[in-house]
Image (cartoon, rainbow, N blue to C red; front, side):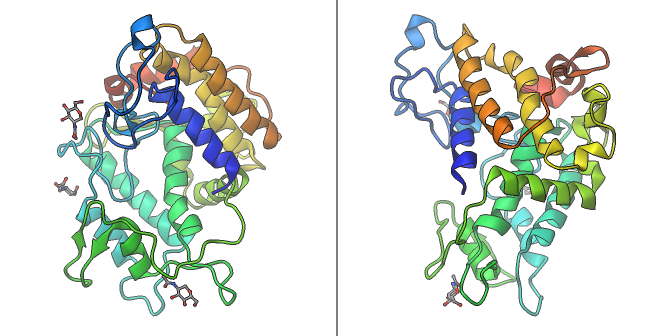
Length: 326
Ligand SMILES: *[C@@H]1O[C@H](CO)[C@@H](O)[C@H](O)[C@H]1NC(C)=O
Ligand SMILES: *[C@@H]1O[C@H](CO)[C@@H](O)[C@H](O)[C@H]1NC(C)=O
Ligand SMILES: *[C@@H]1O[C@H](CO)[C@@H](O)[C@H](O)[C@H]1NC(C)=O
């Protein structure tokens, strides 16, 4: 993983899990943990205890994951591997002559999971950054970071056994079993020779959106399952990008990163008593990324005459329920 992705994700999750103010910033990758320091809580920095990544629904943790259910679907389990979903991905290459979970396969599965979640989770939400970039990027990681790269196949491949290993799944095709905690980098596995960077995610994102433009429509269910209403990024930036322009160069990822600036103040004010410091740390990280991508600056993001963050929270019950519309 490129240093740029790793650095941004670290800052973003520290800020949004509320762990930023700790003297020794760290966060739990699961549920709230007492091992994560919260030294400044009592001097008025944080409104609650720092949450682990489980507590970052619609900021870091999103709906329609590859193998996990949604926080607000009828099962209410957004963290454990659901073997039905794993099998769905697995089966896409089960009988292939030379099984390989390529980016195309991963994208097909991501689109299927999107539709499934819309039909199963009344609170489905797909945010301008958490949905468009984080959800998509996490999907891409399987095809971009988990591949075995060798001299013969420098672009790498990921076959059925490798996929099972990364997800901690064992057993034959017709009897797959999840083993929580059993997730492993496979033995004899060789990483890609170069890094997968934000620029790489940008290219893959455009590929995905070209394959299925629906993925551009950020939004969510508005009134129970199967009531998805999406809005077009072009309508948010007031004509700065026309319909085709969003897929040119780095415009799409540039747009998505900058939505954080407009949607995060609401989120941060539910986590911190004073948001100036977390906001400036987060904005610095965004500015570094935006600068490296030569992004146009979007100085205004409104929809329906309202501030973007407020509009999303008011329109989508899934965003409102979590208090976050990122
Ligand atoms: C997460 O931790 C809280 C207490 O901190 C507990 O009530 C809850 O059951 C935990 N959730 C899971 C899924 O372990
Ligand atoms: C796994 O997903 C399926 C399909 O949505 C659902 O019916 C099932 O209840 C889920 N299982 C768990 C344990 O959440
Ligand atoms: C990765 O590729 C090498 C070279 O072909 C092979 O020896 C190794 O077994 C592969 N690793 C996995 C996990 O399949």
